[in-house]
Length: 246
Ligand SMILES: [Zn+2]
Ligand SMILES: [Zn+2]
Image (cartoon, rainbow, N blue to C red):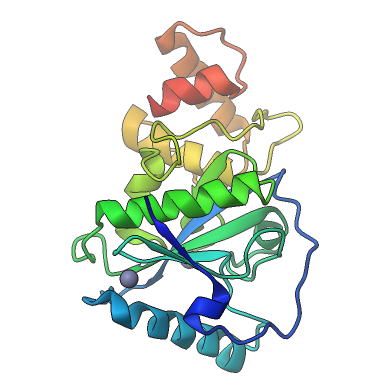
């Protein structure tokens, strides 16, 4: 079980402003990492200083009111309290993302092929963060990667742990987001991007991954539903989601 580290315990600065206008019932939780280079600390004693450095950068260089993330997870199994529950983030790169989604950041980095070691303790800490954001913060079941919201590689090698559902508090597969995707009117939701990515990588489609459930997504959905013996209606509800991520 991961250990929670409060802001007082890691020596956080006070936020300049606390925005409570977040509607995570419409979104969920986004998984991030720090950077495109390996940076996980060898010794846990160095992790709190790393979090303070990120806060300083976000407040002093980026001009944000606080560290951008809701929580931060280290490879040693500790969850550092960020903005916390019921506070709007600055992490997602889109207004919609910051309005509807919390952010859990892994204190890791690297490229797909040269990444910090993803420890079971890191996964446990991410799970604790998502669990808190659901139980005390009202987050919906959806879990996405930053790349589902915005043009970025984040969270690089960790994205496969999102797709597999490993970061979900109850384990995989990735839970259905609680929104049914339809092409009329077009559903726009970051979990549509997660679904499009999965359709391409696991089921052989070539969809544009843009988070918009247009005609191409509808057609691909019908093909998958037919293959899987599901009702063919072109809408991604829980059963079609499960068939996509099983
Ligand atoms: Zn990110
Ligand atoms: Zn640590």
